[in-house]
Image 1 (tube, rainbow, N blue to C red):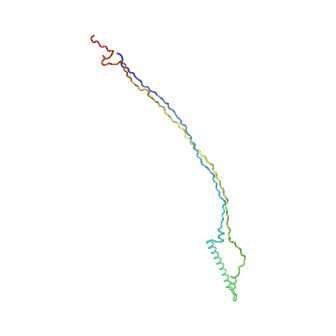
Image 2 (image 1 turned 180 degrees about the vertical axis):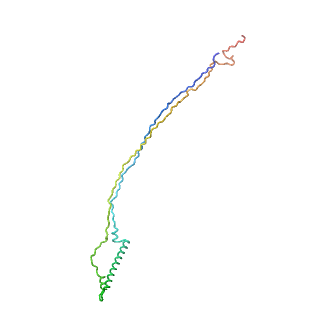
Image 3 (image 1 turned 90 degrees about the vertical axis):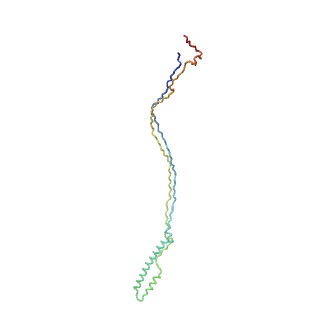
Length: 201
């Protein structure tokens, strides 16, 4: 009897990819930042300054209220001293008077006498004007531009990458069953190669 079924086994197929471990070094990156500070030119000029102090000169012509009160008080005090001295002098004359002597006439004659002596001429204003000045000043300040450099350097680092194994299945296992026999006729007498069986023997 011939074989009717053929069984074929398909084995599994796979690929292995091996990645070795490695140590990688990443180099550092340097960054440079540049900033600029602008300079400039500045000039300060102060012209000559003239100071005129006319306070005393104006007071000698038209005194202020305070100065006028002080001057009037001084004149009143001097007049009181002079009147006291004159009264004392006249009192001495009256104490020493003799009978028949004209003491009152002498007193009136002294009071009406024309003053004698040296007189000083005055000018108004009598006080000078005070003059002062400040010399001129010139200041020049020049500042150049400034460049600022900021260098930033980062340290490099090492990275360890472990090894691995990658498996890729390219063909799965399989069992193939194939019928290799001829056709089966039902009933058997339908087969063109059918031969009846002799049962008489």
